Amino acid sequence: MSLNKVMLIGNLGSDPEVRYTQGGAAVANFNIATNEKWTDKQGQPQERTEWHKIVVWGRVAENCGKYLSKGRQVYIEGSIQTRDWEDKDGNKRYTTEINARNVQFLSSGGNAGVGSGGGAPQRGPGPAQNQAPANNGGQSSSKFDQSFTDDDIPF
Image (cartoon, rainbow, N blue to C red):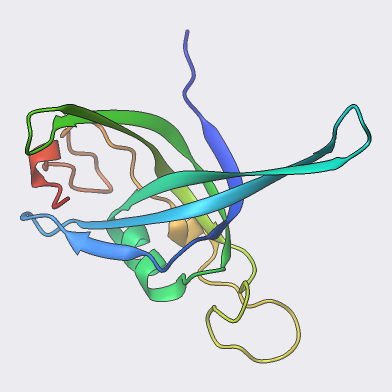
Protein backbone atom coordinates (compact mmCIF):
# COMPACT_ATOMS: atom_id res chain seq x y z
CA MET A 1 0.00 0.00 0.00
CA SER A 2 1.16 3.56 -0.66
CA LEU A 3 -0.19 7.03 -0.05
CA ASN A 4 0.67 10.33 -1.75
CA LYS A 5 -1.37 13.03 0.00
CA VAL A 6 -0.51 16.62 0.84
CA MET A 7 -2.52 19.11 2.90
CA LEU A 8 -1.34 22.73 3.08
CA ILE A 9 -2.66 26.04 4.37
CA GLY A 10 -0.72 29.01 3.09
CA ASN A 11 -0.81 32.35 1.35
CA LEU A 12 -0.44 33.02 -2.36
CA GLY A 13 2.83 34.65 -3.36
CA SER A 14 1.36 36.05 -6.58
CA ASP A 15 -1.84 35.98 -8.60
CA PRO A 16 -2.64 32.63 -10.25
CA GLU A 17 -1.74 32.19 -13.90
CA VAL A 18 -4.45 30.39 -15.87
CA ARG A 19 -3.68 28.83 -19.24
CA TYR A 20 -5.53 26.42 -21.50
CA THR A 21 -4.33 23.24 -23.16
CA GLN A 22 -4.87 22.73 -26.89
CA GLY A 23 -7.85 20.59 -25.88
CA GLY A 24 -9.38 23.50 -23.96
CA ALA A 25 -8.66 22.30 -20.40
CA ALA A 26 -7.86 25.08 -17.92
CA VAL A 27 -4.62 24.85 -15.90
CA ALA A 28 -3.85 27.26 -13.05
CA ASN A 29 -0.37 27.66 -11.56
CA PHE A 30 0.50 29.57 -8.42
CA ASN A 31 2.83 29.41 -5.44
CA ILE A 32 1.86 29.40 -1.79
CA ALA A 33 4.03 30.02 1.24
CA THR A 34 3.80 28.07 4.49
CA ASN A 35 5.60 29.23 7.62
CA GLU A 36 7.07 27.25 10.48
CA LYS A 37 8.04 28.89 13.78
CA TRP A 38 10.04 27.39 16.62
CA THR A 39 12.45 28.29 19.39
CA ASP A 40 16.03 27.04 19.04
CA LYS A 41 18.20 25.56 21.81
CA GLN A 42 19.44 29.05 22.72
CA GLY A 43 15.86 30.25 23.21
CA GLN A 44 15.89 32.38 20.06
CA PRO A 45 12.75 32.45 17.92
CA GLN A 46 13.27 31.00 14.44
CA GLU A 47 11.09 31.02 11.36
CA ARG A 48 11.28 29.26 8.00
CA THR A 49 9.13 29.87 4.94
CA GLU A 50 8.63 27.04 2.46
CA TRP A 51 7.31 27.76 -1.05
CA HIS A 52 5.09 25.23 -2.84
CA LYS A 53 4.25 25.14 -6.56
CA ILE A 54 0.54 24.40 -7.02
CA VAL A 55 -1.09 23.08 -10.21
CA VAL A 56 -4.90 22.99 -10.51
CA TRP A 57 -6.97 21.67 -13.43
CA GLY A 58 -10.41 22.23 -14.95
CA ARG A 59 -13.20 24.34 -13.49
CA VAL A 60 -11.32 24.68 -10.20
CA ALA A 61 -8.42 26.25 -12.11
CA GLU A 62 -10.81 28.79 -13.63
CA ASN A 63 -12.25 29.58 -10.18
CA CYS A 64 -8.74 30.04 -8.80
CA GLY A 65 -7.95 32.52 -11.57
CA LYS A 66 -11.19 34.36 -10.92
CA TYR A 67 -11.23 34.49 -7.10
CA LEU A 68 -7.65 34.14 -5.86
CA SER A 69 -5.01 36.84 -5.71
CA LYS A 70 -1.68 37.53 -4.04
CA GLY A 71 -1.86 37.29 -0.25
CA ARG A 72 -5.06 35.22 -0.18
CA GLN A 73 -5.03 32.28 2.22
CA VAL A 74 -6.00 28.87 0.82
CA TYR A 75 -6.28 25.25 1.89
CA ILE A 76 -4.80 22.86 -0.68
CA GLU A 77 -5.24 19.10 -0.74
CA GLY A 78 -3.57 16.99 -3.38
CA SER A 79 -0.52 14.90 -4.19
CA ILE A 80 3.16 15.50 -4.87
CA GLN A 81 4.30 15.11 -8.46
CA THR A 82 7.81 15.52 -9.88
CA ARG A 83 8.24 16.21 -13.58
CA ASP A 84 11.43 16.30 -15.64
CA TRP A 85 12.37 17.81 -18.99
CA GLU A 86 15.39 18.91 -20.97
CA ASP A 87 16.13 22.62 -21.20
CA LYS A 88 17.31 24.35 -24.38
CA ASP A 89 20.94 23.44 -23.55
CA GLY A 90 20.11 19.75 -23.18
CA ASN A 91 20.36 19.73 -19.36
CA LYS A 92 17.88 17.59 -17.46
CA ARG A 93 15.65 19.72 -15.20
CA TYR A 94 13.19 18.74 -12.49
CA THR A 95 10.32 20.41 -10.70
CA THR A 96 8.20 19.20 -7.83
CA GLU A 97 4.60 20.38 -7.66
CA ILE A 98 1.44 19.82 -5.69
CA ASN A 99 -1.27 18.53 -8.03
CA ALA A 100 -4.27 20.01 -6.19
CA ARG A 101 -7.51 18.05 -6.05
CA ASN A 102 -9.24 20.29 -3.52
CA VAL A 103 -8.82 24.05 -3.13
CA GLN A 104 -10.70 25.93 -0.45
CA PHE A 105 -10.55 29.72 -0.40
CA LEU A 106 -10.05 30.86 3.19
CA SER A 107 -9.27 34.47 4.10
CA SER A 108 -9.13 37.38 1.73
CA GLY A 109 -5.49 37.95 2.68
CA GLY A 110 -3.71 41.31 2.63
CA ASN A 111 -5.71 43.67 0.45
CA ALA A 112 -6.69 40.97 -2.01
CA GLY A 113 -9.79 38.83 -2.31
CA VAL A 114 -13.33 38.75 -3.53
CA GLY A 115 -15.07 42.01 -2.62
CA SER A 116 -13.43 43.81 0.27
CA GLY A 117 -16.19 44.94 2.55
CA GLY A 118 -15.87 44.99 6.32
CA GLY A 119 -16.70 42.14 8.64
CA ALA A 120 -15.79 38.50 8.25
CA PRO A 121 -13.27 37.39 5.63
CA GLN A 122 -14.76 36.83 2.20
CA ARG A 123 -14.91 33.28 0.89
CA GLY A 124 -14.95 32.07 -2.64
CA PRO A 125 -17.04 29.12 -3.78
CA GLY A 126 -17.40 26.38 -1.17
CA PRO A 127 -15.50 23.11 -1.18
CA ALA A 128 -18.11 21.24 -3.21
CA GLN A 129 -17.43 23.59 -6.14
CA ASN A 130 -13.69 23.35 -5.66
CA GLN A 131 -13.06 19.65 -6.19
CA ALA A 132 -10.36 19.33 -8.82
CA PRO A 133 -10.05 16.16 -10.88
CA ALA A 134 -7.28 13.71 -10.20
CA ASN A 135 -4.78 13.47 -13.02
CA ASN A 136 -5.49 9.96 -14.23
CA GLY A 137 -2.67 9.78 -16.74
CA GLY A 138 -4.86 10.75 -19.67
CA GLN A 139 -7.77 8.43 -18.82
CA SER A 140 -11.18 10.05 -18.85
CA SER A 141 -13.53 9.97 -15.89
CA SER A 142 -17.26 10.49 -15.72
CA LYS A 143 -16.89 14.01 -14.23
CA PHE A 144 -13.95 15.44 -16.18
CA ASP A 145 -12.38 14.91 -19.57
CA GLN A 146 -8.79 13.84 -18.94
CA SER A 147 -7.93 13.16 -22.59
CA PHE A 148 -4.91 15.47 -22.58
CA THR A 149 -1.30 14.50 -21.98
CA ASP A 150 1.74 16.25 -20.50
CA ASP A 151 2.54 17.48 -24.04
CA ASP A 152 -0.68 19.55 -23.93
CA ILE A 153 0.55 21.55 -20.93
CA PRO A 154 1.46 25.02 -22.22
CA PHE A 155 4.47 25.60 -19.94
